[in-house]
Length: 99
Image (cartoon, rainbow, N blue to C red; front, side, top):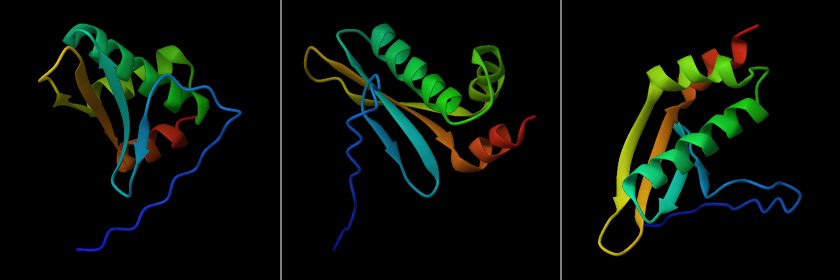
């Protein structure tokens, strides 16, 4: 199988952690020493990402994010825990249309 991907390095942006975007989802990744901390990091970064790319403020992001996100544990075998929080591009499009 051949896989092709691209990476955009944007040095002027300061983001909380790794972010991934594909055709179906946007994803923020939280890595920390505990499950709670990793969830908090990933969720906060996803909220910042949405807020920075829409007209919504913090309170406007919360309901849309809260009803449309999916969490996956990506890493647990060592001292760090990894969490991936996903938001469907379709839900994101509805958020962007919000006045």
